Structures are given as structure tokens and as C-alpha cells.
Amino acid sequence: MELDIKDKVAVLTGGSKGIGLATARALAEEGARVVVGSRTSTDELAALRNTHEVTSVDVDLAHADGPAELVEAARRTYGGVDILVNNVGASEPAPSFLEFDDETWQRVFDVTFFSAVRTSRAAIPVMLERGGGAIVNVSSLNARLPAPVIAPYSAAKAAMTNLSKALSEEFAPRGIRVNSVSPGPVRTPMWTAPGAFADVMAAQAGTTADDLLDRVLPESMAITLGRIATPEEIADTVLFLASDRASYLTGVDHVVDGGMHKSV
Image (tube, rainbow, N blue to C red; front, side, top):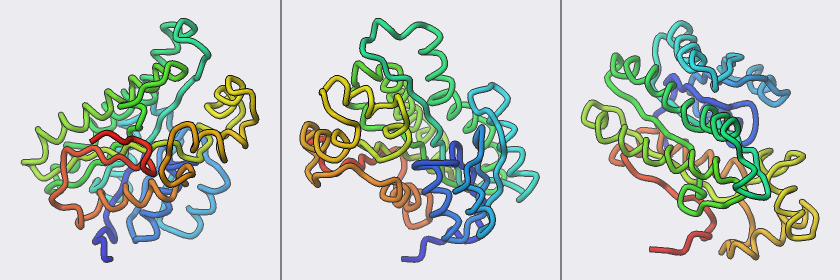
């Protein structure tokens, strides 16, 4: 399927690992010129820069000035922005809601939600100068199915989904489509890193992180496909929504969860 994104300029937040890295790779392989913003690089991102037209910007997207710095780097390097993928997110799981203090809530919202607000605010005028574009916000199934151990993250992602619809209402008539993608569990560092979701939930379930990801999680969450997703499977959906083949899709939250969420 021809996606018609060759030579388009794509700005991506949080592209050094996980879903972000997979999305950066997918965009680059389709011929887009990709500008990745993240606090640190990784060997995988460096390898992608060596083989495709990918530029990385070391920037703290949780800082108020970081998103505008990223968008300006894309404008300066490639002349504008056609695609924006707001992907960066962070969570600090805890056994109880009562353990989340104000500073934790603020940190999670700064990275997960306000980064998208600020990057969109910086990118939209640049996109309008080029006649429009596409924004894809990476939300989460937790926006619909909140979990106490990640209450700030769930709330931030719910805000992200709401923001996507609000942006679409205003800017779709001006040529900018805005959609969101809500993955279920994905095998990314947010789950697999030490102290992340898998470790916290495995301790509560009395098992190991590997067993939780391979068996307990798919069974307990009734994931119809019997496994959690790979980052590449989420990236494929983002890629489609960012492309001209999704020209009549806007203001929609696309759940990609292997059949986990069963309501109509």
C-alpha cells in the first residue's frame, strides 16, 4: 500500500526506544524525513540515523521550552512540519493512590500530557503554513481502563485522548487531521525496565516479570489474541493515521489492544 509520506517532515517525541523508536523507523523506511526529540539517545536510534534521513534533538520535552525547540529544529532543518506524533510518556507506578504526591502527578503530566499540548501548540502554526498535515497522539487503553497503580499516567492519557478530539474539532476544517492511538499492554521499557509496570504487578501477583508478561497478563486481562503487542504493531497504526491513506479519519481514538477491551 502506497502511504504517500515520502519526503514529508515528521516530528516525533520520545523516539529513542519503545513505540517511539519503532514509529521513527517505520516513518523513515517509508521515506519521511524524521526529527526525533528525546532527552537521551540510544544505540538503536543512532543506528537508525546512520541508515535513514533521521535527525535527533536532545531536548527535555517536560520543560516548557523543549517542545518549541524541537519544532524549530525541524523547521530550520527541513523547512516545516507535515506530521506530528506526540508519543513521549512516563509513569511512576506505586502500590497505592495514596503514595502519589503532588510532585509525582506534576512530573507525569509534564512528560505525558503537557509535552503534547506544547508540541502541538508549536507545530500547528508551522503545519498550517504548509496547508495542513496530520497529528497522531499516542494515548493508552488506560485512558478508558484506569488502574490505581498508575493513576497519574491513566489520568494524563485520558486528557491526551480528550485533547486529540478538541484539536480535531478546531483544526480539521483547516487541513490538519488529529487522531489518537490507544494501545493495550506493549512490550516496551515502560513495562520491562527495572521497577516499571511489570515488576510492580509481578510483585503483587507473586510471580516474575517474565511470567507476568508472557502468561499472567494476557490471561488476567483477557487479551483475545493471547499475547501483548510489539512496538512495531502500534507503529503500523500510527503510520497509517499519519499517511494520506487515512485522509477521511479525524477525531477518532483507535484502540489497538488485541481484543482486550470488550465493550461496544
